[in-house]
Image 1 (spheres, rainbow, N blue to C red):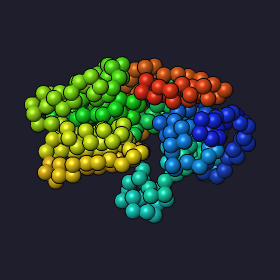
Image 2 (cartoon, rainbow, N blue to C red):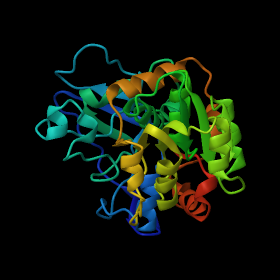
Image 3 (cartoon, rainbow, N blue to C red):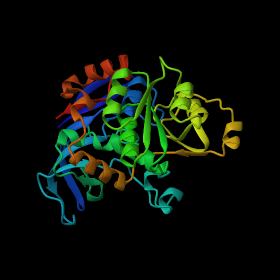
Image 4 (tube, one colour):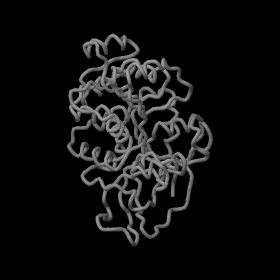
Length: 338
């Protein structure tokens, strides 16, 4: 069967690999759409320290059940539209013992620490198959990245009557915008691209700030009456946005980081203490986050077409990735159709 493989930095090819064999307790799915994640872009650029090349990318999936193995419980049927939970968990580390399996110390994400599913067929344990009936397989490929933003809002414990600043309006950041607005918060979306900010406004942001053309601090102070925001969700992972989060959050506020900086970040740590901040990390997503995204998408209010920048077949994946690498700030999701 066909698969897309990142061979070396800036080198990608289509390869032939064996079709997987179905085992007990497993489900075979026919892959229909796979999204390129930011982690895949970093792998392509040679900036992902967690990857050993060559690797098959892909963990943002829209698929259809092809076969069901012995020992799989009822509820799965051939032809059902599904997405995949691409994370593993050991069941023994501190995170797993605390029920936060998304942050397992020994997690291996599809397409990162192990081969992904940018290929024609995949076999996974039934526990990793997430039914998404009523949602097209194309839209299913958006569930996983959006769930990461949903999870960050849960980590931040966002409630109504709060100002929530979301920094970065890519797919993950937009997920945070949606979820925070669902919870009744007044969302302030921050990005450097006016088109992304306009989309953030349409899906729930009450305010937008272009950090390239506007003074972020002055706008935040004006919007919040001088208090600062109650919550910051950082979805970029740059030193500048890491510092911005600490500076713009209110006294006794909460900061949740999704992105992680590839270089060291210098903080005025006195603000941690003076403001008595809660600073939290957010990693991956939990099954409840996937379900929440599925419920949102079923409502039919998501501008799905605007979140998909490009669609291509396996043979066009290399050119699509090069295009993304040349202008990453303009791209939401590139889908590879099998």
